[in-house]
Length: 416
Picture 1 (cartoon, rainbow, N blue to C red):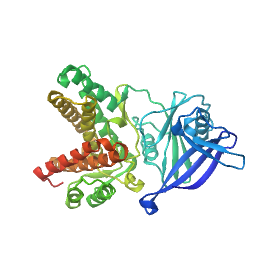
Picture 2 (tube, rainbow, N blue to C red):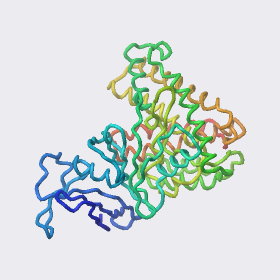
Picture 3 (cartoon, one colour):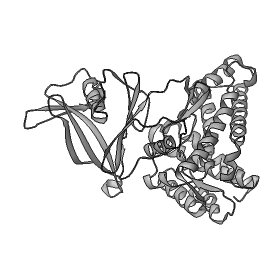
Picture 4 (cartoon, rainbow, N blue to C red):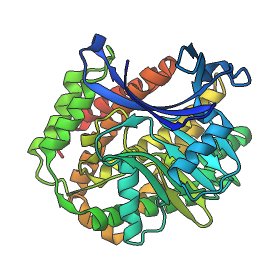
């Protein structure tokens, strides 16, 4: 890693520094990637901060300075919020916990400030797409209130804090836990998720119709889709993946003649990217898969790519709920499968209930099913890449999903 730029956003102690760092993989020979860091510097060691937030000290013209993560310090985090929104009179801040590819803060329990860690020369899809959807009046995304940019790069965005019952993944896990605790069929449980799943499917379809209106649609390019999938596949180092066989499935898209239309899509859609608000769903985090290059994330794709992400998500949540139990018995495994199948079918039914979305999809039902299977495989490969980096101890789960999808493909052999 090498530091490419340092700007001082606040000069007094503690200082607020904006840093751009360049990172290259493969021992420095790989493609460069740029990350922004918001650092604090003080003339005293910030011992009140957790050790993971403290970066050590260094000499400066003003004496020795101790460096730390500025967003972990309330005073500097509020200062940065005022950099993004100079007219803001902010008074309180807290971090949003969990493992995320970016840093997010709740300001005054009314706003969410999202700071993008990875910087690219061009608009961030999370800003670009939500601004476009807001411009045509689509109401189930959180539109940016303020965007902090330098040059062409979107660096941070301020949005209103949405009040909700929770993320889709949280509500789904609650439903599964009740199924397991009672050992009853999902339909016989108070927290049955099926109505929520059907409404979510309908909302995703409405989102796709709105994306086509806001950002355009064009005929599908199967070769380009296959190229992007193959490029991502070959960035993954995992000996158990049959990359040649997987790429063979992808390449079938190049000879397919019924792929529907290409639109801008969410790109990383799953239950954790949906909020249950009042009587509807709100969708968020439109950056796409963080591991993919910005140019790939901004390219148009099939709406079925998002549908495939949700398909995988229902199975992921069921697997995660079983993992909480340690050693579940066969009855619980069957109940988890029943839950996933029931709610996935409800999601797909809700999606298909929106007439306008069908003009974006392949005309033939068999072609739709085959294309969905290809995107499910691509989504499972992405899961492998993510878990290898973040949770290597469970990378075998999506690896098994990839193997299962390949076996199913061999059994049916459909051509998209």
